[in-house]
Image 1 (cartoon, rainbow, N blue to C red):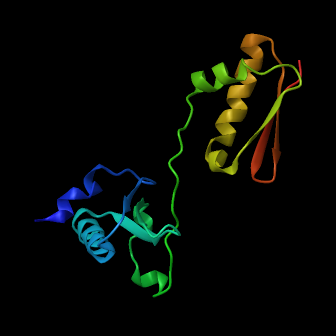
Image 2: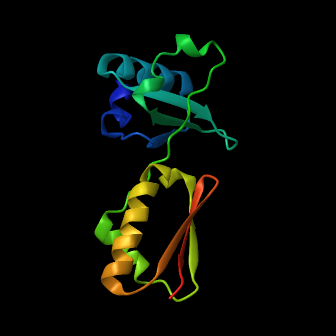
Length: 143
């Protein structure tokens, strides 16, 4: 029986993972072979509960030899990115004085979020203040 096809390697997006409960070496080899053939990168991590998670990583981490024998790949968490309309709708739910600290995982959208806040303020007559603090963004409704 070929267990390799039972792993969902072809369905995984970056940041996805699946759990392996036994035959860890088989799963490692299967992920490695699949990655080599399809130009992908995977990372296997043992968990405290005795299972192993197989993560799909970004392809820029595919070359293991450059990381050294003890190198570790960075696991990317999948993030749902909002559209301008979704962001504006979310801002509409703010009460006066309410603020939110946007986490660093959205830092690549901070410039767009600033523009979206300005557009929302103009269109809705709500005053939205935006302040960058370190690697986070504070969004506050003032009026």
